[in-house]
Length: 216
Image (cartoon, rainbow, N blue to C red; front, side, top):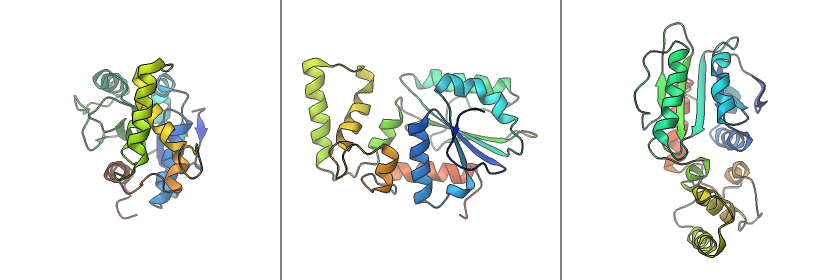
């Protein structure tokens, strides 16, 4: 439990993410939906640290509900299995064989309620930036230009891992906004990204259900 906290710790609701970029996105997304005071967010130092800390986090004093958001990466099945195995080891028995498209929520008698979200959509391999790309307004004229420029770079001299093309697309596009290079979280507050986009609403719906905030 030594990751960076992005909210004063409440008594019962905790959200674990892989790193500070993920945390900042949720800080700004929750702020948009007026939910910041109900959920503490903690950034771990990568997926392995997050997985290693799950059993300790579940024993956090006063914890009632724990959310986990991680990248599916290139193999969503392998990522899910690693999470599923870890929770089985900590006493959870009703974990589905595959992640639920709407976000998985697990209840186990005598244990905190657990929610798991695999970026971007629980059904696709990918990462945080794939989710962010869904928040770019559909009529944005610079997004196709950004993706085309990146493809030209890939064909000319690709200096980044090819699996990170979407990450490069998003940050190229962010570099062209009114305040160039704003972090992804701040881009939500600046309204470069649409916090009301369907994919954003879907993950917020999962958060409300997991943390029992439906009326908030």
